Structure formats: C-alpha cells, structure tokens
Amino acid sequence: MSTVFPQWEVFVRARRGLDHQHAGSVHAPDGETALRAARDLFTRRQEGVSLWVVPSNEIVASDPADVGALFEPAADKAYRFPTSYELPPEVDHM
Amino acid sequence: MTADLLTHVLRQGDRALVLSHRLAQWITHAPTLEEDVALANISLDLLGQARHLFTYAGEIEGKGHDEDHFAYWRDAAEFRNPLLVEQPNGDFAVTIARQVFHDQAALLYWESMTESTDATLAALAARARNETAFHLQHSAGWLIRLGDGTDESQRRAQAGVDAMWPFTLELLGADDEGALRADGLIGGSIETAWRAAVAGTLLEAGLRTPTEAHQRAGGIHGTHSEHLEPLLEEMQQLARAHPGASW
Image (cartoon, rainbow over all chains, first blue to last red; front, side, top):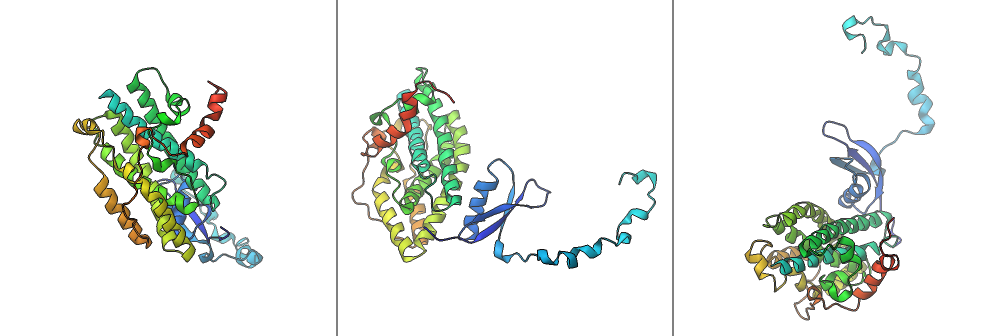
C-alpha cells in the first residue's frame, strides 16, 4: 500500500486540570483512526486522560524568517515587565 | 465440573494465544507504521489475557503446570482454540474480517463473564472487556473504511468476510458447557447479540452478510485445520530448543 495518509498533530492531557500538550504526530485516513493510533502511540503507559488530534495542514504557523519582525521588538520594552514594583514582604517570593 | 472448567479456560486461553501469535506475524508487514503498532498492541493484550488464563488453568488442573507449559509444551491436538483464530492472515482485509468476528464475540463473552460466579474469571473479565472494546473499535472501524472505500478495498473486504464467515458459528459457544452455564460460571448464549451486532457493522460497511452454508468447527474439541501446526512450530521452537531458558 503506497497511499500516504494525511498527518495529524496529537495533543495529550496528562491529568484533569492540566492543559493539552503537543505530544507528536500520526498518519491516518481520518480523525477517528488518528485518535486510535494516537492512543496506541502516546498513551500506552498511562500518560493521558484526554486526546486531541488536529489536521497538521490546518495549523497556521509563523514563518521562521519573520522571527525578527515578530519577536525582537519585545526585547527592549523593559516597562512591560513588572520588575520595578516594590512588593510587600507578604508576597516577596512571587 | 473441574474438568469442564479446565476445558473452558483452555479454550479461551488458546483462542487468545493463537490469535496473539497471528497478529504478531504482521509486525513489520502492516500497511503503515501506526497500524504495525496497533496490531502489536492488540497482540500483546491478547497475550496478557492468555497468560492469566493459563496460570488459572494450572491452578484448576492442580498438577503444578505454569503458563509456559500450556503455551509451549502442548501439541496441536491438545489446543482448544476455535478454528477462526488459526486461519492465516491473508491480506489486511482478511485479518480485519477475522478480527471483527473475533472481537465482537470476545466482547460479548467478557461482558457476560463479569457476572461469573467464578471470582478469578470475573476479575479478568472486568479488565479484558475494556481491552476488547478498544480492539473492536479498531477492527470494526477498519472494516467499515475498507468496505466503504475504493472498489478494490470493498472487493477485498467482502472476500475477507466471505473467507472467514465459515468459522464463525464455533465462536458463539460450545455445545458441551451446559453444566458450567447452569452453575453460573459462564453466561448465556451470545449468538443473537453477535449476529445483530455483526450484521450492523457489515451494513455500515456496505458489505453482504454471507449465507449460513458450510460452517466449519472442531477446534474447540481439538480437531484443527492444517494451519495450526506450522503456527505452533514457529511459536514453540525456541522454548523447546532451550527448555527452561529465561531472558
């Protein structure tokens, strides 16, 4: 069988109350099959209580070439960090 | 009663072990890497069920035999698995058809066994039921996709269903377990529920339910097809070449 199935990104929630975290990807013809494959590959050792699969081609990603325009302007904006506030001792270790 | 229970437990253990080995034969041959892992996982679940059943068989028998004895030191005529599970893998559609028929029967069996008056079997059933429910999602999901897929996948899926159908009646219960049933050790017949569920899956897959003709049976009484001996030879070779070896 030479058919290459579409790729799906897999997100696993480890416990109730935690966020889903990206775990990896699988190839599958549809979402249900992708979920079953993800269960076998990523939750065999009790790693999760919930799974999401998302078609990889539905993810809109930032372009690595744009890294300067997107992220570097944040580097010299010290006023965005709340480091100049004096904290009362009660919250000293925030 | 003890002899009846031992036979019953060996039938179930042999069913799980032989099918486990058949699925293990797919490893590195499955259509995709994901499917390789899926079939291996199902194979390992079945192997785990077989180990529990053989350990229990040893307790019932009372001759000090462990799980390895039942797996490795019996010959084909002593195996009590239904003929279906020893049938060769064929193409992927044959394997999936075999698996759907098996998984549906196994799910109904384990569901009924959670009510067994035998505490060991009832406890195993609670775990095996969950495992088997996932196996059935996998196999039925594939059969529906193959049947409802391309012309070729539908042709192959129907061929797989037709090829495996003659071995299904034997899955639906033995004719010599009335005493166990009367004592509540095993549940009632699963035949009606199995037929309804499988007909539903085949309908959803757009496949034809075969007619009843030419049913083959005998495995649960020790009369096997020509396919079991080569399977056991492969499976038992290492244990017999190096008795007592561990690794």
